[in-house]
Length: 252
Image 1 (tube, one colour):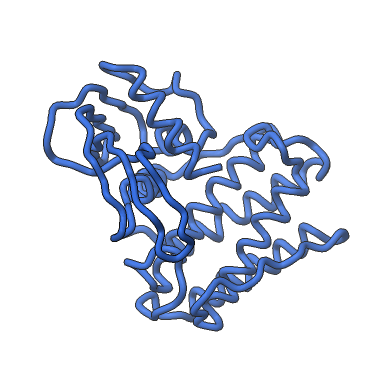
Image 2 (cartoon, rainbow, N blue to C red; image 1 turned 90 degrees about the vertical axis):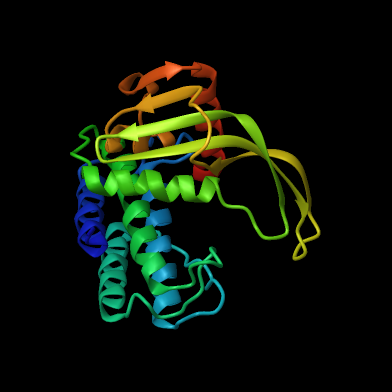
């Protein structure tokens, strides 16, 4: 069982240490439009917004807080502690707003904050020039979380399966996903979607492409923080590129 809050604390602290070790104006290579100041302001705001979500048992997303011009890292550190205290005091089974209707629980935010903090810790360390180890079990869970977004469609959508399949293999887990097309009209916004590419999880079909690597290497690659060269690709390499293109839409 993964101790998500322990990972939030550990990775959140590493992020703070990386930010303190350099100028807040240095570029973040994995987030081309950001400098370190933007990164710290973003993750600090995410922590505070989700802390308010859980503390208030919100039924909608609270407003995103504005970061201060001065004392930014101290503000970030304080928000991290507030988030940890609030999550630790909450029952993971309690109902609260999330953007996944199938899982409106505090436990959703345990997991999401662990992965959000991990990825942005990596961003901060890449900018500071000293990437530390990524926990393999957490990273494998991160692959599962991201594939869950990429294979989820609302009830009103029509999903048309394709004919090509990708197997993703880590030392501790394996997933099979297939190409598909997503169509429909959102009843909330009226936006029409027609034949947008997505993935579906499946146990059927032979893999046209197999991607192998550690959980950490695959997780960072799917999030655009690691190179494809760290992975072993068997079969249709274009399918691997298509998977990364789809994940880029989820992780931008």
